[in-house]
Length: 95
Length: 491
Image (cartoon, rainbow over all chains, first blue to last red; front, side):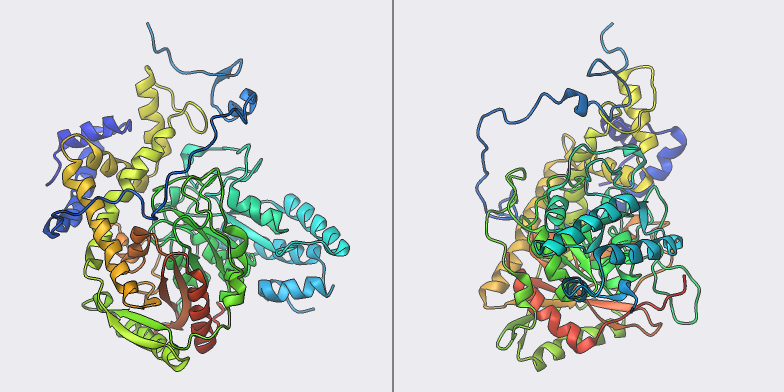
């Protein structure tokens, strides 16, 4: 399988990465090189094989349903590019 | 006094205990070495004030006789580990000036045991790379050069800063991480020892995530013993990482010097590649003979799905990365590039903040997870991964204790030499190491010789799950037989 220019633009939008028209042919070539490389997986017989979900056999641990941290809003927002009163600020979402 | 920076951790531990020198003297010697080696670009942040403060505290503890196992030992930390109040960037522009308000579990255990932080080490952006050339701080220089040449070589990656700093005596040991070979390949390129432990052995909490089902932390050091010392402090159960395993941490150092007599060592025929350089072939057979001379038994084994590990990895790892890196959106931390709408702000931020390699992987990961392609790519790769793991299980079930392979298909190469036209050319560096991550197994790279140009080459030993001790015992045999290799100082 290979990707065309329209697909490259669609994936970039899904991944929320702006891509200029000038960059598309180059990216298309790189992605197709990767896809050509992984193409060899189609020759593996995977009939009846379970997909791996956990590389180490273990039961998912569950933690207690208790509050053991918090009241640190000021610390949480400290690294944010734009804040007001312990809130993250973003461009207007609702008109 | 001999140069304190050339000591091993084990030797420094003795010197500190016998009061031959102080932790402050040891740290100062390293800070001076770092300052004189900035041309290598191994450190992206030096923390001399913190280092002196920690060394002073270590001296006080030593005086009281209550120092931990790493008391006063100066270390470098890969910039993928969150360090409280100290800038942590994953060497990506998108994290900008991120100052974590928390400490990664692995580093907190090193400080608990008395170690000293010298600074943060360079790496490929988000650990995506095999040459340390994708870092937003620029490439790292390998202290090793070809004989009679001034060409600047890469230290490997992604833990290139860790490997370079350890090899150039800019720290006594370093933390590193390994998703497809990022500890073992740079260790092989710099004549250092690097171990990727079993998946679940070290907590991933507070380490910037790349591909969560593959990422593991481990040490890079100058000797097998030093790696064992660091491993003991780094490993252990952490309730904050649900994939961290709740089993006791052994005294890995006790495995150093232990007899390997009667151990069965697998030599996998699928690792004998067409066109493999003769010097890699020779290194591999030398290693096998050293282990045989120490009493181990060599057996040929087969790992039939080996050739599919790298292509499966280049589906699984980018898929997980595309999901993990969704968090960098210009809202909660790091870079923000303005846009007219919130979507445009996301897109501009991520376009400007991610480098080319990261962007490439996020895009391919997004593609293989997208509707209509998930089954053909991601699901198929996860099934192939099951087969790769089964290859190893079958091999261990036949009584094999460990598997011996070359660590890399070549020695270190020049900056800008690989991957310019085709990204896959760079990916092939990890051909011998990536299987281990896919199967969640422990793997160690140990220096074993040099190529015709005088560059170091390493061997890899792959172990059973949670049997790092056997790898340390076998690694020590190779180290004793091959000797140690130190880069001639030119900087």
